[in-house]
Image (cartoon, rainbow, N blue to C red):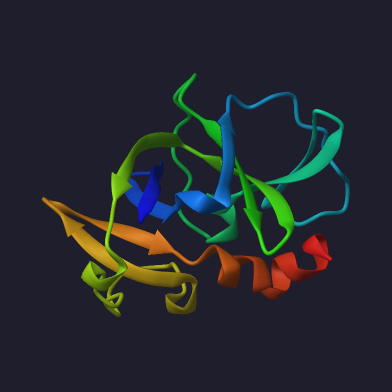
Length: 146
């Protein structure tokens, strides 16, 4: 299986590449009032209105200084639902074997364990493989995704 790897702050994460429709530079985002702070707004992508979330805020991770030109929006499709997710930067596409993923350690930090499929040690840092299906089922996003 291949995974798209990306950074939120200094931590590298991964997701199943089959759930990624495309990666793009952030276009103008239309702010929607009275939404949670992790919802950045919506974009019009070739006639489709797509909600954009800041995954770092959604996961309640620490803010990081902005590095101009590195942020990307990943357009994801999971269970017939489409969502845009802001990443601090994209690192690479990796071939991963699900059987090689270790369960997440309890000391992993702020990311809720139920949102993590597993962890793989990559040299000097862990690669955290996120479960997008479970992220979309989270109560905060369920209402947004319908």
